[in-house]
Image (cartoon, rainbow, N blue to C red; front, top):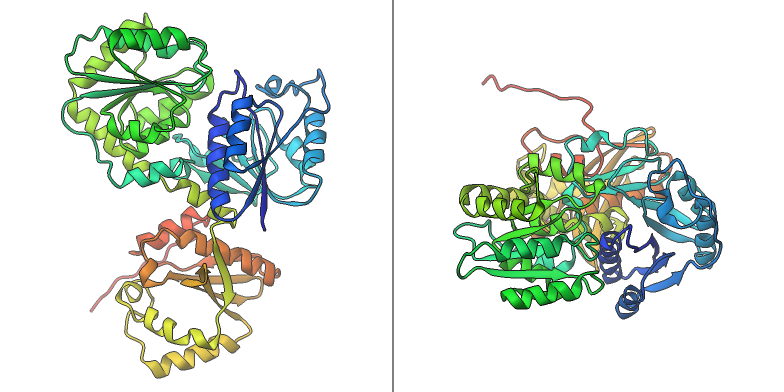
Length: 503
């Protein structure tokens, strides 16, 4: 069984967002048969109970302590000890085996800590979104939108590191993907507003928003207010909601349902931004932390949310901009549509596929595969994206298949999930390079499994043919799906081939 460890904390400084996205990843990994262990220095009891209820292992880091911090890191004091001491404790907590992957989601840890942990982890995934320090990792995930996404980590990660950038990789819980099918871009009048500023909200933006909305004076408007169980102003907010007949939800597990039901959101940036985008909820987004300001500004410029500069007193500003949105149905519709286009709810599946945990197994093709490959290759959906678009007759197919199985410089592979073949990958090897050709079986053409199949095959050839150092692909100019597949899997465009029909 594969095993993955996760290093994350929860505190008044860090908030709950990092933990919740790691928990989402852990739940998806567990569903794929992966064993998950959390190691945390700061984790409140209710979060420990949450891990226990879900069947995840948990080891607290209560060992070494130090007054030293990484003074060169902006958030070094959030760790509560030195990186050296934390690495020592983390290694001890993971010393019972070598872990397939270590996931690190912590602003106070950098390449020094990550390099030290390589003695207990074969691979490292870093989750980051502020790009302010060096990393020693195999994969880096930044699920937020930035105008310069492709340049933010240049020189901060190893050359071989795979970058998973943007909200296509947003770690959303499964209920968001399930509700996505019934969500539509918002149109019509606003009848229901959702207020949520995260699980901590130390500065009580929730209370001020409740006050602002209580003075709108709009009949029939339903207000849902969501807060965490540890909100510092919980009693005051609960009293205000009862007074104004707002619906209050404390530590709810119905977040996806509430977002899908609302017409307008008011809340903070961070991970919830992508939950709202996934289900098409246009939102007045307010920056509540310095590390959110750039993300919110760039996402607003892209039309994914509404984030005006709130000048003067916050309560009248919220009231003013909520009214402005209620009077501009076209803007609301555009923001809703853009958000749904940017986030489809399948990000966690893409991430676990990049870790080799997506459930696709690779094996070499055998003679018994010939018939189904013959049928797949002649299917219209596959012929239209092939170099040879013609129908292949059985005799020629059998010759080609026999040659492919016996050729030392050609690898013909089958990808399968739970024993069911889902696609074909072929590598043609020349010296230390290989050209890859790939297609999903007709029944799986729109299943979203192409990247998982490709990356599983890449890991297979890296293991079986270590002499192959580079893989390239030839994609037809009008095959947009394959172009997105290879670009999304970390391939780079090196040249372009132009052609023109004269007759």
